[in-house]
Amino acid sequence: MEKVKIEKVVHKGWKELQGAEAAGIPPIFGKYQYIYSSSKGKISLIELINYYRDGKDLWEIYSIGKEGLFEDTEKFETKEEAEEKIMSYLN
Image 1 (spheres, rainbow, N blue to C red):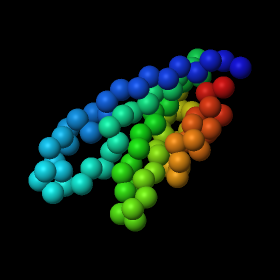
Image 2 (tube, rainbow, N blue to C red):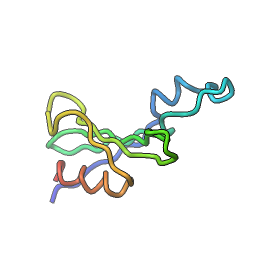
Image 3 (spheres, rainbow, N blue to C red):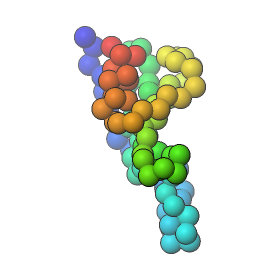
Image 4 (cartoon, one colour):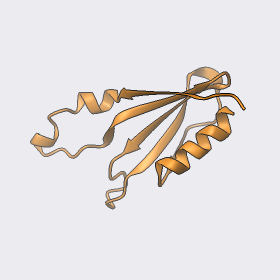
């Protein structure tokens, strides 16, 4: 099984919305974006804060670049579920 590399970066959307909470705008992204990569491609994982406004956070993955590992985005209730799916795509 190939080793999957993980890079943790500050999410660009989170950076853009700094200070928005003080103006009454609730956060929509978690602070970090995780980039998982292997020879098969790259996948981004982000936390979506209270996505459906039901008090629950979701985790969203999407394929980065033109590798086309899967279409659109996929959402999960836990980070662990999302990571399991990521590994199935990248291993």
